[in-house]
Length: 544
Image (tube, rainbow, N blue to C red; front, side, top):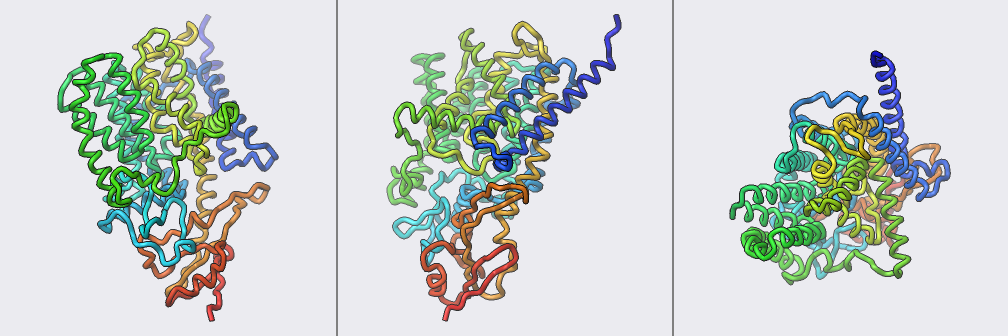
């Protein structure tokens, strides 16, 4: 019998259409759009997760019928991800610091450019209060670690903040490539895994944003690459490099640094036992200059080198109150929300295959430290008392998520580039092709909905500014993005009092929702006072 080529091609096309549709529907839930038909939040999260899992199963079943990826060079998806991150930042609008977190990092970069660690406080701290920019003891400062903002400084100086994360996306890809090759992955393994990680909306949106998670992920990937290279060819200089990379990670994300150090140290103790102590000396020497920078920065802001700026005003964010059952319920709710977001942004296949690979590696006792990074991230962040608000997927997982590709490569894929699942050989390249079809459907919708969302939030800055020196008071707003949508999205005034480090602009923005906002603004010398009413309309207040 001759193979039914036309029938196989038709089946592949039907599967591709289903995957494209699944990605489109999942992404249509961005910004809680299922609320328009009355779905509660948990049902919406579950719907996205189920759609994502169904797409993974469908891609696995059809993998051997899909065409392989059209490129031959592993560096093609790296370059494509850099370009994709730039385009996503521009088209979706995420290169603008939409979140208060992102703006706080830019604020700190401006502070560094001015040659200082903190700034004089605004004339009325309550009127000009902003999310994640704090006033304490007469100091106006960002509470976040300094590393990401320091990296932003040259980009900010030339007006190209939009390029910082795409550059780091490329670095993430190079470090992943180096790690996969070091682990023995051939082109049949490396090429599809790079595409699976780098060409999803999860990577492209964070790579186009001003969030620090891409920098953390790139540094973690570089640490793994450096450590694996040092194991193959031990060198004091490579250990110093590994320690220096840990130092850069310390200054970028304290939580990520702590998690990676603990898992890495445990791995070294298991493998090297007492020799691990000798290995640790050059690593610690590489780390020390960065620790000194951290101490100098903390002392410069708080006056105490041992007082982190992060906890100087705001208490630690991990909340273990509520009892055992309450904690488990919160962890389950948070993880369901983040799994739904991961499915929506095309990142679920990496987690599903990584989980299967981890189980197989545990059974064969071949686990390494990079295998446990994602499970540690998922377990720890489940107990945060919040979900992160502005999400391009579960961004708190992103620093560890790409590392699951190493678990897939070493626990689930053979040398010919096939997945071994339940006694069946499944083409990894074909599976990735199916996943990218799903991701393409999601990406198109996510670009549109995210652009609409950010444009609505930015509307307060689209009004023609008054000719003279002025204060524009911004109210609490509730956004209705689509005319058929019944659920409104809050836009707090705290997110838009963006006045730079010195409040010296011709127009400054204050909060209309503080008590006596107009009279307080009128007391500012030489500034006319306006209240933002709606897009395109300012109302002048009489200060007489």
